[in-house]
Picture (cartoon, rainbow, N blue to C red):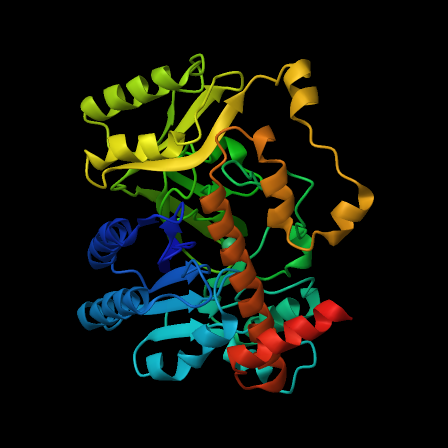
Amino acid sequence: MKIIHTADLHLGQVLYQNYDRSDEHDHFFQQLKEWCKAEKPDALLVSGDVFDILIPSINTKKRFNEFFVGLQKELPEMHVVITAGNHDSASRIQADHDVWSFSNTHLIGVAPSLTVEDGWQENYIIELPAGFIIAMPFMQGDRAQQLQSLLDIIAERNTEGKPVVMMGHLAVTGLDPTGHNFEVGKIETQNADRLGKGYDYLALGHIHKPQTISHPEDCMAMDVTYPAPVIRYSGSALHVSCDEQYPHTVSLVEIDKHGGNVHIRQLRIDELRHFYTLPAMTDPAFTSEEEVLDGLKDFCQAGNRGYVRLRIEYAADISSNFNQQVYDILATYGDEVRFNPKIIWVGQPAASTMASAKTVFEVSELQDMDDPLDFIEKTKEQYPGLDFSILKEMFKEVEAEIRRFKEEGKAEKTGEKSSTAEVITETKKSDKE
Ligand SMILES: [Mn+2]
């Protein structure tokens, strides 16, 4: 059985509220299509986080449709299995399941409920001539029993000893989180022994660094064979942050038989834009605004293109229109040098500036503040370089996300979509309680 395993496409991602990445995704899609045509796998697996947000734009949805429809037209025999990740709307992905079932494309969004009915397993088992696939989307909490029951059903059917592949979107114990915002120990991971027994290859998504669990030394090995079972993250399609200092790949996996050998080759993804930190982490940080702006100009003039994050000494005197100055410089280079406004401040603030900058509040004053932005506004001198308008936009986005999550939850409970208007009223009511 031969599969191509990828995950975390994050289609529709807009970085730093500013930069649409659809051309980068198209560039990835072109490569993915070529690999599928060349390798002719039995299945292409996308293990969650297909989209970056719950309700992707029409343009994003259109590109998704065009790509996967095109792929099926060219390779009608190949099965494509797409599961929902935590970034996706489970019910929206699931809603498209029936339409795509006219092709060999399987969209699985909703995880099995905890009160399951007889025969629920059939929604997650895909039987191919070459082997079995369990298409498990993102799910909350421990589902050891459910996973094992799926694997048990396959064990019974698998009289010919065909390979068994299970998909998942989760954080497994022992993973390397480099490039993510969390530290090990601070995220909830699931132990591999809670994911059931009986699969040969567990095709995971959620973590952006390609890696095979319990083989950290082989993380960058381009061609390697292990005895089954193997647990692997294919890694994301594109870099999602400046901290991802590793190549991105898709995994081409061949399994000879159930309980046999798993042969993994990594296919290196060529990315349209790269991520830079300026100055590089090994060099001293910028010490003044002038130095930053000059450094940035040099960077652009040297022909570099991509996303740029800056490192500046905390003590540097940065004017309030700093970001605008940066954008003005970058405007000269079209859209091709892209600014990450999250600056890395190097060094500690001097004790004296800390004391003078600290704003003192009465308790009653704090109690009156019901908007976190009020608090930040009143203390913003403490955050040099802070762009208040960007922050405001980010808060708005978080608020919208929370609202969508509530809407999703409600839709899933009642089995129908509720209007946004209803949800807003509900949120307001609960605020008062
Ligand atoms: Mn994820």
